[in-house]
Image (cartoon, rainbow, N blue to C red):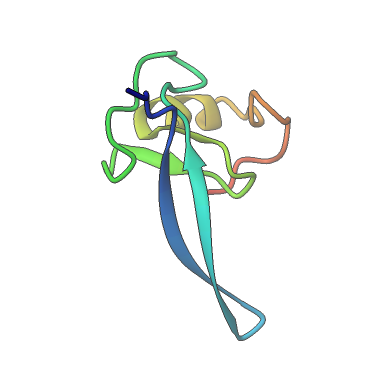
Length: 79
């Protein structure tokens, strides 16, 4: 019997004319509100360029306040 700790999301990124497929780990809870991110495929969860993920509504408020990623202090850019 095992527990799934995180989900993943795959995304294709085009950079400098090269296409790269990247897998992001989407943890079980939002780093801002600490509520579960039920499904990594859910469109309400977004992955930022720094690879951290949050509920879309939570990160919008955070970003609109001019703040950086609460985990790594990088600028917030959505992939």
